[in-house]
Length: 292
Image 1 (cartoon, rainbow, N blue to C red):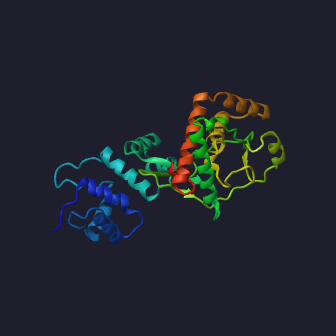
Image 2 (image 1 turned 30 degrees about the horizontal axis):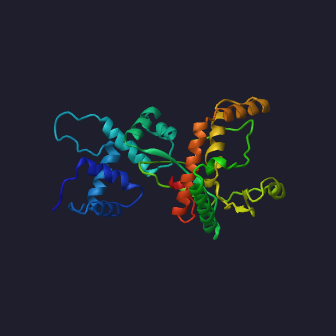
Image 3 (image 1 turned 30 degrees about the vertical axis):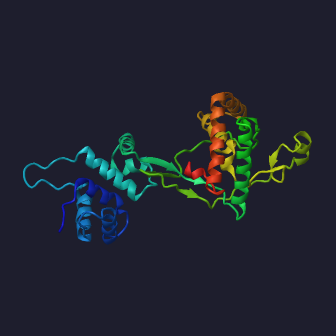
């Protein structure tokens, strides 16, 4: 026995349609709702045809004056479009639909859709998870012995700042109501480092962390380095908040951005590092950036 689709069920069918066949969509919907009478692929076909023609999932009135498209129906159309093309920008969507970007953002925010960002992770080699786990367990032991251990670590790293640099926060966005944990593990990042082990052995005997040091630093682990998971992104967002005139201006912006970091923020970064150490152990040494 067939059962009339509710407005919410019709919206759901539009949102899950994508580029799939009507039979697949019907099967997906029926699997989601095992307690209701199943729908046929013909029902899906009629509903999607109606939506493409009218921009609405609602039935037209049988008589009298035709209703105008409501804001709710516009929201359904917007969500359906982003569901089919989640990497589409709001700028492009605005040009194609004639809806302002402000309205698009309001619709997405109202329905709790967010622009999730692609995480570029360094590819882990076969033994890297074990090395990451070993380091994290060492750090956990140190924290148990000294709760302020994190505040005593001096992390070092390097980053490039350019006069014509900028921070583009819109690249690699994925609009969705749930985090797709969209990652690209194919990126392998690595640079040659100046070897200073002799100096470190002399100045900090048995107290430095690094490749082939007294404490082995796990390779390909930017998600465990505060400079990578916090500092560089924070600094560049501030530095490039204005147009850089020349090298001196760039240096000044970097110094001002560093000076603006409060002790409270640094303590929060320390707490974040400790959280990441625990997650690394919990996830057997795999990258954890994309699940935070």
